[in-house]
Length: 114
Length: 498
Image 1: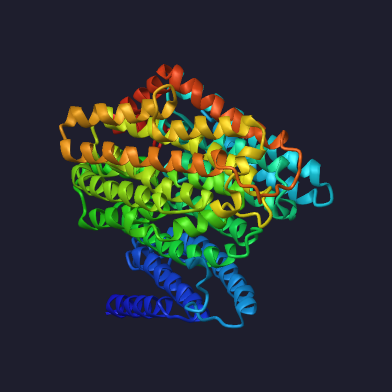
Image 2: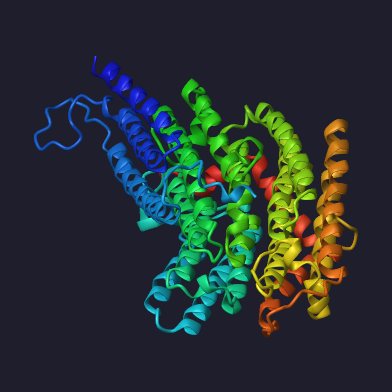
């Protein structure tokens, strides 16, 4: 059951992220970027989290139980750091560019077209 | 057996970056130190290449953990070849940056970011762990985005946002693909995956991952459906950054696809290859024809990169050993030529009044500059177009040979025809910038001698590799021999061994 809920949550986040990323407002697309990364991080978690029978880090492990995969959590930690860095950089650039143009509408920033 | 030179190729630049950050007050010292760090990385990559082609693949285990548990850096033929190419051009780019008068080069963050970009690129080329491939590629992307965002050209910021958003999608695809591979094989080590693929079954999830990984790498290389960011992003970059972005940083995707096709997806290589031929041909024509109607020197060269990457993809798509040799030689030669041409164009455009490479501004600038600059552009342009004494001819010839061998007449015919487009736009630029006199043009008088060193070195290498191409071809053949057998890579990593 939890797998189904998890899968549905990842799918919903992905859809929301893509929708936000394609918005005209740069701040909204930056948010979509963050939501998409969260969806992918959850996917990474789903890859290993439900394989085992006990939690990954536990002091008193009953004999014969398989722990769930701790590596994916390490991967997510790295991916979160990376996505956080990109998100911060993106927001910083959006801030500067929206100050410069007095708008965050990506259709108004068309100076590259010529 | 740990080879410290493999580690040095990837990590010396980032140490240089840390030291360069401390030298905020000492501009010249910072510039020379950054150059020295990249020179050291280049020396390491040269040693690694000599060892790899003499003795066989070299590895370095990070922290001493045995693979597949620890991260391992693997320099096999392909990795060492690309790392040497990248280190060479990066070194030339930093040598140009030492003397570059652009305002952004003196910002405290510029040279450290340049060096972290080199670490990202070299690390991604050398790592044997697919998750650290993702981390290194992100390091490269974030550094290059920041470098373009702080460019003198105020449009750089817009282009940087655009690229960061598009490249974010590529990163997500890469991460999804990695997660799929981890779900299928329970490992992140590419050698371990390859071994399981050779001996066991092929899970459906892993085949799905191939689509995501190939798309992510195509995006990094600006191949046809994902190319829209590239001209803007590259044109607005500062000249030393543009020189490395257009020449070696776009090659990361080429490297990644060759690695996938020869290591993990050997059975799907035929199908992916036929897709690459089509995309490559579209790129060749799109890049060539758009470059024809572009009236800006830097933008023209950025479009030209799309076309040249197309040639490499066509050759990779054919997939025979000869065609792979052609692709590798083409990638190497194109990196040298494109970096040199962009540096020459940057020398000219930084001396015009609005500092742009528009033909309206830079047209005729070549007639006021010393003849060596014209000579460099001419030799480089001929190399790009593939005129005989230059190295570009060798790579075009190799592609034609492999096309004849696989008897793909239509793609071959189209590719050769598109090769003439290159000649047309190179000659047109030559006429506009170096032949036509422009009486209104006023150039800022600056000493030019220092900035010429880096492009001269690169062009000299181009001429050398055109006249005496045997070593490069021989090395590329050795690389392809290693790629033919995935166990060369797998055995080099020594899974579970000490």
